Length: 395
Image 1 (tube, rainbow, N blue to C red):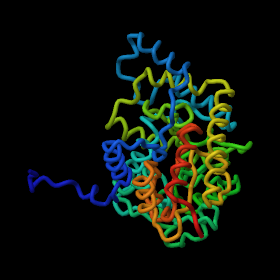
Image 2 (spheres, helix red, strand yellow; image 1 turned 45 degrees about the vertical axis):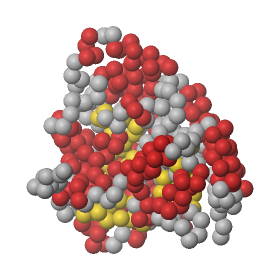
Image 3 (cartoon, one colour; image 1 turned 90 degrees about the horizontal axis):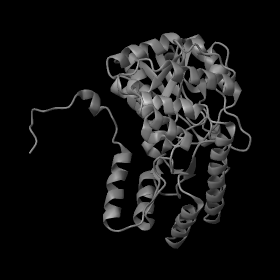
């Protein structure tokens, strides 16, 4: 029996229902019923972290100094490896002493950044659909969320001209993410140049999420916000080792960019946590120093799955353009079905888990996100189940 005078803070009331929690309930029920689930819902990479990364963590565990409190700002060696990685990948120079901050996963940093900079009533611009942390962080902070509805007609790119002068003048931050989760959209360099100019004009902090940078295909090379002149003064960029290095459960990422913005986040975090376990930072440092052949193998693995699944979905009526990056497909629902109903219908009839597009905001309605986190044998089984259940796309 609950106690009626125990009441949650109002900030929790502002949060929309978490669709992933509802999915977890349905998955658990299906498992109890003996259904063989093929879970293509969460962006949870399959397989282990690379062996050199595991070995580095094991070696670090045997060192006494590893087991004490790590530095609040992360170990010097991990911060240096991040700056070296950015120089190698994007020719961006960073000062490891103030322009880099390790995080307990990028989600933690994205949410805490909002707590560090958003006052109640501040306007925060967030694309819709978007990774949930991009809008849940500002909501928790009490910000006034202004969704920028994306569309397939605009290739899922933010159209800055659609933001009214009044809103632009009031905006404090804008979150964005290319290559994009969930839509898989990519943005040309010209877009990044445009948004830097726009943010300078309206004095808006840029928050870019680049966590799918290495998962790029067909020769495509994503752009870092920090490549754009002037961006480092007014923006930060988040990254994670979860996807590329199969380290989702290790909880390690980082933010780079404006020293002023990072200092605000660091100040908040010193009051909330003691940083990342040093053994994990050593392992993450090793991951960033892996030879290029490792990244190439990861790209080939996801590209193979992308092509296999797209070809199979085409036979079921879906016409799709291959995505240039990320570990997802963004698939329209059959006509007449919303995203939640379609995802739950697929789960109940086939045991296949898709993520409803509306989990990513109102702009995601009418789509589901499919994660490429199973090998082709399992993807083939998923396609067979869809066919047998009569699930297809009809215009």
